[in-house]
Length: 608
Image 1 (cartoon, rainbow, N blue to C red):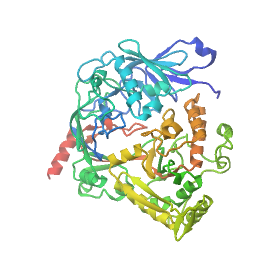
Image 2 (image 1 turned 30 degrees about the horizontal axis):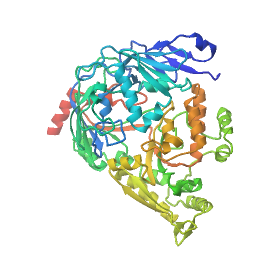
Image 3 (image 1 turned 90 degrees about the vertical axis):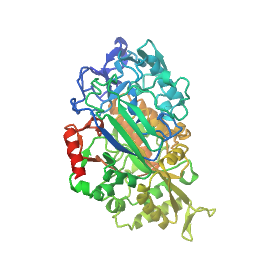
């Protein structure tokens, strides 16, 4: 396959390179995709997985953990309530059944110029805010400029290659690019949440919001009790209610989130019938926790829903801003002590798979030794990356699961000695006699049963580790400020990684509070590989460049990989109807509905 720049437009793949590119005019389309031709035509009636005749009505109560003190989810300050994005619309709607594909939603038409140096969106004529005022191109420009200037740091990196946004009419907005090499930029601009300019005039966007914001989506904030609960009411006359991207979705009249400080209490509330639906992420609960009366009577249903999502990387993350973790041999030693096999057998009931890539569960994950095009990419960095990148397949240590990880401890002790540490009086110390001591910061008690065994394994090596569990709000503040030694983080990935990788791995973001570079990774080669990935000219090259980045990250031992699950674990009281199938890349709960017959039967059974 030739290295050519491909962009998938609504009517098929279109080559945007060479002389032929200059001869083409602008392309107008209803959809954009990075991986192929969009599956649905412009006049598709509804998403393929939904029930377009799903009844509307009923109330559903869901769980949230921690607390909240703001109704602005786009800024660093404050802790926002869950569910707030449901009150806003995006320019394009992401298909949960296709990888990296978006369809016209708030924007009716997408226009790509011949030189691919920008993108224009034409808004639907009937689009309006909940107060009845029309959504305009000025609102789009205001949203882009405000989020990039005052929003979370993520937005600045995500849209870093956009030169300007211009309203060219009441319903037409154009984004101009700094270059035409960032192949996903038009697609990610389609993900922009559009905010009402007239609502925010006179309000400080950078401060936590203490009143219900104005939106345009299917729901509005009906009421809230700060830190305890928030209720959203469906807007019956929302402008997009009958649009193909909304038909059959968002069927509940009321969605209420109840906040709990502790996951165990939240689970008890579900078992008592106070919560209608939950996703389970604790293997022990899934294996043994659902033996309660309502489950035995058939009033509660459990299901495992297979998905095709990349699972990314969940890991113990060392804060590289701390001198303690700057030696790769130290980091590898800490990884070697971690006994995943014992945890999976004794804590997780064997339900998880080990994560061995930052792009796990996808074709983007590196494996074996580099070869072919990936090797060509890495060769230019020989001498600047660990030599093991070329000579040794990355493999995590494997134990027999007995809890006696003697080989791992011996290997870890050797690595620590090579890094200048030694054991004196059963304590790991440096040449100055200072102990190797650090704190593991957690945002909930459920992870203590993983961290505490790890602390014991580290103690066998003479390392003093402590576990500190804080509430989610305090945890957010501390991690945003990178005020921790080690924590647990999840670095999610898509099937088409791109601009967001800057926020995960680059030096600039390692220094910027609130970024997603939680580990503090700062390596010039990683920075260069990220830019290569973002500017990959086609899918084949993107795969090679992503694998190269993945391999370099792994061989630096920046994190201690944990595990992933290829299924959604869900439990719910038997009052729901749901479509015949789920979308491939999502849970699809927004397409469920309250089934009147089931709801009545459940109510009668509860009375009995």
